[in-house]
Every structure is written in C-alpha cells, then in structure tokens.
Length: 256
Image 1 (spheres, one colour):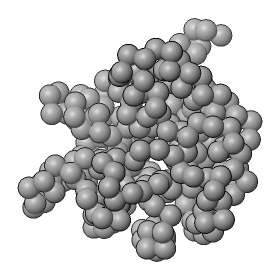
Image 2 (cartoon, helix red, strand yellow):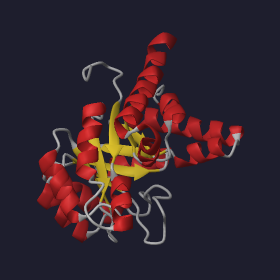
Image 3 (tube, one colour):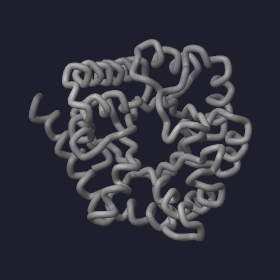
Image 4 (tube, helix red, strand yellow):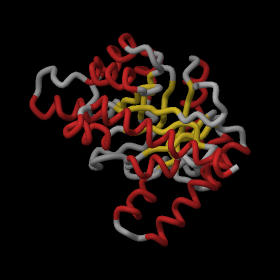
C-alpha cells in the first residue's frame, strides 16, 4: 500500500499521552507504549514535540521512542540551539520546526518563515546534513511556501487550525476560504518540489476531507486521537482515523 501513488501517511502525535502522565506524575500512561499501539493500529510514523518547558514530552521519552519504535520518528522542535543539539544526538527520521511560546496552550500558528529566513536557514542545513528530513510548520500561504523553498526545506506541514476552527464555529464561508488556501498551498508546494504534510485540529471528518487533496502526503494528528481513546481505546480511534483518510483518498480516484 505504501507504494500506491495516492497513499496518505498517518503520523500519530503522542504528546498528550505524556500530558496525562505529567498531570499526576510517575511513569503512566507511557507515551512509548502508546506509540507502539499506534503503529500496530496502522500509524505510519510517530510524532512528538519536545517543548522547551517540557510540559508533556520529556528528553528521555524522545530517546526511548527512537530506540523502541519500528516506524519513523518525527521530532517537533523549536529552532533553538538546545533543541538542535538534542535532535542531532537522537537522530530522528524527521524534524519539524515549529513556533513556540511559553504562554500558548498549543501551537497557535505557523512559523514566520518570511521574517525568519536568516534564523531558520542554518537549522535546516545542519539537520539535513545529519540525514534528518526537515519540515517547516507554516501557514498555507504561497509566500511562506516560497520562503521555505528558498531556505532549502524539503518538506512543509501546513497549519490546518484556521480551517478546523472555522468549521467548528459554523462559519462556512471562512471554512471554504481556508480550505481553498490549503488546496492551493499543497499544489504550490508540489510545483516547488516540496513534500506537503498537514496537521493541527484535525478530526475524523476533516481528515477525510483533506485526504481528498492529492498533493498532501502526510497528516499528523494527536490531541483528537488521544481524546477519542478515552471513549473507544487508542487502537480503535487510530483504525477509524485510518479508515476516514483512506475513504477520502478513494474519492480522488472516483473523481478522475
């Protein structure tokens, strides 16, 4: 299945398994166990964000994930020297550079690639030299994609939060505009030779819909799956997400 032209990869983010653990302290629930269950249920990779304040994932979690899972590890990180040193030591399959503010509950938007090219370029270069695939988490704007290409990023992850928020608020017009931006951004990334991923705020319905964009090759989803796991179990939630994504992908063939 991995070789099918329209296959859509699912990266499962285990950050909020660690959030539950840290709420009480101790070792449980273990994000590495969650990652192993996710892979068994159909995840194509595991994503984890080592924040500077260590609010959920910790340094030893990243090391244990790298050592313990059989699928690619995607290390979400701020573009700081400390995080660069950790990434170069752990050697994950991929690193996604994300904006980070201590006061935010979750990532609230994309990187300022236009204003931050000078800062970001050496991080992209050094991670790439180490054999780590680099992605930039950005807004779905053509200018941001062009800036990502200019600094040598081989991949981007489009921030889907504005689209998901508009749908949740029942603002159909804005949701339509935001989805059009995502579609245009994915298409533009492919034209620039950049691999296009997407994530943030996705649920079963929105994952099914964005799966209809053939130029998006990977979705990264975490919080929603961990929330659904409370009710159905993690394996069942991931299997249902995989099915929703596959359903959206099949719509591409039906339309052609």
